[in-house]
Structure formats: structure tokens, C-alpha cells
Length: 124
Length: 371
Figure 1 (cartoon, each protein chain N blue to C red):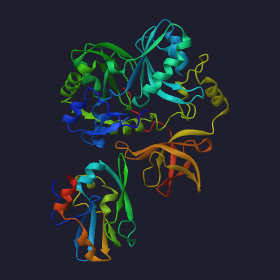
Figure 2 (spheres, each protein chain N blue to C red):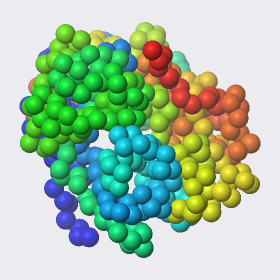
Figure 3 (cartoon, each protein chain N blue to C red):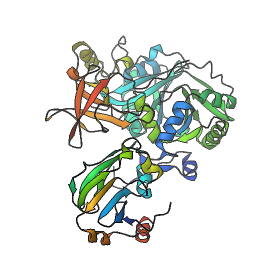
Figure 4 (cartoon, rainbow over the protein chains, first blue to last red):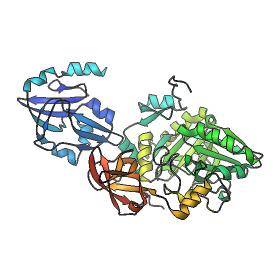
């Protein structure tokens, strides 16, 4: 699966779609492959302030649990309501299945994220 | 023991797994497939059709000689005298304290010849223990025959119709926990109606050099029924749904058959066997804790090692837990104080800092409809 050029990435295998001062966060195709079948995504309450690097939730597959880390600081505006009943969307369509939408504390902070070419570079 | 990392052992099907793009992991010192097409897909295949498993990492220990029955009766907690030739039973290999060195399946190959199928992680420890313990039994010897067998399991409702065309052994006449000898796809084989999934199915012992041929023949014969290869991941979720204990998780050298709800594998009418005093005492006087099955009431999945809590006090521990692909529920097993062990009783599990409610349910979680 290709890594879309319009997304930003972290070395923790998350992707970020920045639109103005808001951003959607999800996990990459590589991450979902490593996890296997996702069965549950535990997300924060709307309104919660999260800081960069903080664990904001967890994602559970049949075999393991892994933490979700906030790539940037911000306030949670929305969590993806589809994931409650369809966590498997993380596997079937990882780059369109966002988990949280946040208002960024500092929109410039996204400049330090990886672009798709750099991200593909760390996978090889 | 040395500090060097030992090279992982490979089953005779290792090249086949790698060529098939299976995801491989290190398990009990072996390089094993954890999943092929995904745990959920493989799990559902076994519940609805059939799946193929390489379980060649399991160990085999054979005990033979004039006094073989007495030797097996001493080391195994179940009653091997109840076995006819061609019959198998689930049992425990216990310490003098009645705790599990391992769990195992005991096969009666001949009147004075038994085969124990044991866990890969404990095979060496088991063999050393058994060799020592059977010395006083008289004319008997134990041999580690693990390298003589590859072991392939076909599990699921379609197993019989897939396997039958490949063998002259009448599978219909093979009862549950019975086995027979013959050929499978031209390979000398022992076929056992056993498994670790809660489904009907067979475990086929073949010479290692025939393993790939038998594996491919089974996949080919199973093509119409959409039989797929499965890994250890699905094996674990399947056995948990079926309420089967996993050594190292649910039972180990700190727990006994009575505490883990396995009274039925203890030969209570037998004379002395290793660990029997402790078991008889526990049966008579009860135990402080019990292994129970639970399902989550609150959202979340309890995993191995998570604490069972009462307020801020730790009162027990989760030994296995997952979200099951077939029942689609978060289930698990845990040791809890006996007064919390009745079906319907509720307790809390600390899921990464959050007290989450769970309810005791009777085992197994899943039971197949028997024809």
C-alpha cells in the first residue's frame, strides 16, 4: 500500500492530516499490519487537552495492546464514531480511518513531522 | 546454560511457512508461524470449515517396558489404567506439591508402551524429570522421540471429509480421544482424534521427511472446502474460547489441577502418584483460589498478568484474555479467591489503571454442537 503524499508521519507509525489549525490522527498501514486484526480502539473524551508524546488511547488487536501517542499538542475536538462498532476499519482502510481530530496548540509544530518519502525511508 | 542466544529450531515445515509468507515468531525456542491470513480469518475458518496447523514443535516422550504402566501411573495424575490400546487421555505431570510441571496427552500405543505429547517449552524439563522418576519403577525406559515426528493438526467441522480420502484408516470409527495407525498421502502415520481448538479434528503424526508432502496433500484435498493454514495466534484464541488451559499462562508450577478446575484429570481412585497427597487435601478441604472463566461487562480487554482487584487490593490475576473472533466478546481466565468464583459473581480487573467490571461464566465459553 502506498503512503499518501498529503499525509505527515511519525516514527511511531502514526499519520497526521493537517487542515489549517486542526489535524486528524490515525495509524499507518505498516502499523496495522504489525498489530494484526484490530478489535477495539480506546479513545479519549472530547475536550481533553493532550500534550505531544502523551498516550491518548490504546488500540487492541486479537493478540496485543499498543498505546497511541499524540504526535502534537492540542485539544480533542472529535473521536471517530465509526470505530466503536467497526474497529476493523483500521485494518481495511488505515489511511482514511482517523481516530481523533484535534485543534493544534501550535500549527507550526507539524513541520517537524516526516513526509511520505521520509517515512517510507524508515520502513526499509 | 550459556549466555549466547541459541538459534531457533525449525520444524520440517519451516520452509513451507516462509514460502507461504506466514508471519513468523520465536515461540518456546522455535521459529513458528503466528499467522498466515490473520487470526480472525483463521479462527473463523476452524469454527466453520477447517484449518491446518503445524504443531511439530510439541514434544514426544515414549515410555516402554514390562513396568511401563506402573511408571506412567506414578508420574501422570490421570488414571492410565483406564486407557485401552488406541486411546488417549489428557493429564498432568506434577511436582510432589501437586503443581504442574506440564500438561500432556497420554497415548496408550500398546499394553506396555505409552507416548506422552508434551509442550515444546517444557519438553526438556519433562524428559529429565520423567527419566529420574521412573527409575524405581523397575523394567522401563523413557525415550525422547520428538525428532521422530512431525505433527500436523487439521481442525474444524470439515476435517473428516478432507482427511478421509487421503487415508485407509476409517475416521468415522475413530472415537474422540482415540487413535489409529495407517498411511496419510502415502506417509506412515498415526491419526489421533484430538486437538486444541474445541472443534472436531485430527492430529496426524508423520515422519519429518514426509511432513511437507502430507501438508500439501491436506491443503489440496481441502481446497473445495476452503481449508486454510493457521498459526499459533488462532490456536491460542480457539483454545481459549474452548476453555482449554495453556501451560505457562493458566497453569504452571505454582498451581494444581484442583485450583485450576481440572479435577476431572485426576485419577482419584488410583494409589499413590506424585503430588497426590496435596490434591487429596485440596479436594477435601478446598482451596483459597480457583481458576474461573470470565467475560467483560465493561468495555476493554483483560490480558495475561492484569490484576483482579477489590478496591485497591490485588486479590487475583488474569491468566489469559482476548477479544474472541467467533463469540465477539472479551473473555478470559483468572485466578480469584474462592468466594468470588461462583458463576455470575462479579469482580474488577485493573485494565491499565482503570477498574473494569467482569463476570464469572462457566467454562467452556464455546462448545460445539455434537452430531
